[in-house]
Length: 159
Image (cartoon, rainbow, N blue to C red; front, top):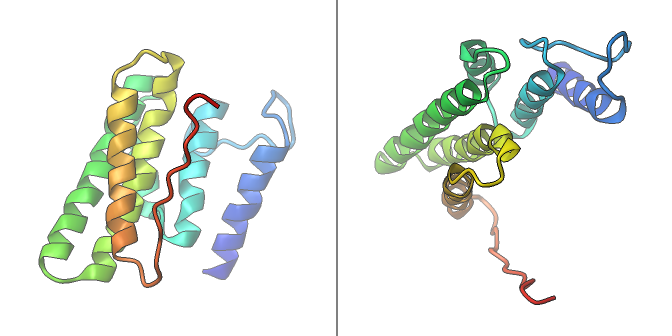
């Protein structure tokens, strides 16, 4: 498991440090030929190391997405996020706090992933609603953490 975690981390750094251009030794296709889709999939997958994703869920979701179709990207990641959120609620109702926390953390990451390509149109009203769902999922998980996670607000208006 440690080797897989290290491989994911190293792959993510390679994507971050080297531009994805044709013929680049470090360009890597992960499910998609499109470098942005491939990178965002790897980004979502990278959270598996810390429990913010499940490798099977990420690959299943990515394989359901039509390449280059931002609406398909949004729709499939939203489905996965909502499934995790529902699973978290179900676990919480049964008193299984650790499992609930894990599902809420994954849902938070998957909502962020769903939102990513919406930003090609900054006026898309779904951006704020999906962001709020991701934030709310994270806060649900934070309440169930073994250690305190404090919500901090930093004023920035007018600065």
